[in-house]
Length: 159
Image 1 (cartoon, helix red, strand yellow):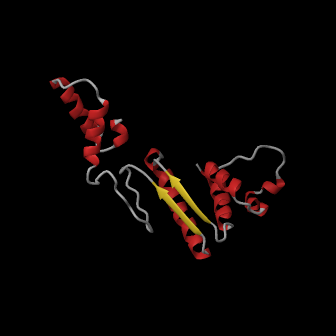
Image 2 (spheres, helix red, strand yellow):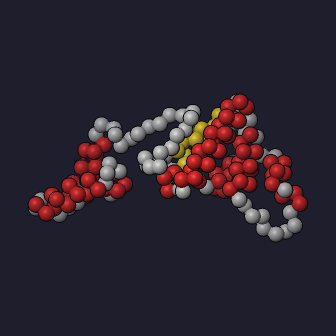
């Protein structure tokens, strides 16, 4: 994920070559550099600090699909970068999306829970009704009910 975000950032904005200095790439001996999460975080932080008055928005989906320690480290890292950019006057925002487990605490941010919105359950019912074209037998009605229950309020699971 860090490689992808860095590539997108470095393709769009000119950054000075010295952001690579902390990684020791100046003494590169022709072998492939082993990118670690830590080295990518250092490079990302350097690149973001060079944004100046530009703005950056990151959308990070499916945190719940990471190992718990990975997403906790990631959230902590982005909070740290957010503090650095705030003090530098850079507009930097990160939007995370995740299911409810595991629970994520973000110290400076907003939390939105979307599946509890009015009409959400009805949207799932409408979707199942429109896509499940099996008629109206007792068995089909039971299948509809089970689909809606097993979707657990997650539209993607219903589809």
